[in-house]
Image (tube, rainbow, N blue to C red; front, top):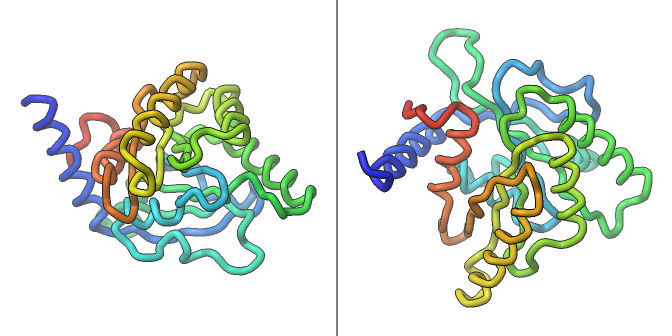
Length: 226
């Protein structure tokens, strides 16, 4: 099987998986509210307004799953979603997605920001089932200092992460090429960064199938095909 054939098969298998059960599990405002670490987890993080909710919705094929748990006062919590559920009664999901609150709060009180940093840092450093983190970067702006801070935190926690450029339909192809190149160069400076840069557009569907397959591979292994 050639690499393109294998990639197509992986994307099809991932699409089938996400067309099945994807359910909101819980929000965790503190570490004691985290679900038991029994299945792999894939975390999503990024600056506020980076398009994280839209990407989660596009990956899961849902219209508003990323907002299912969001109510006033819950914006600083980790939100967990179960993906795939075997038919056996009481069976665990295949893996979980973790929606982390946007960072880079321009208007958030200092205490709120510090609480968020403590929760995220503790989660990233101590979560043994965390298989991969996706760091979302708005392609119109590229990597900012606050993103570098998050990437360094992940480096120090020895948590492997993929960099995902969002909203790629909003800029010219030539500008996107420059941003992608600069992002790849930045990634080489970080020990935990995956070398592949994902270019995505939730609105146009660009790069979604490939990223979906990558998420499944990170959670369940490269050989998983359903």
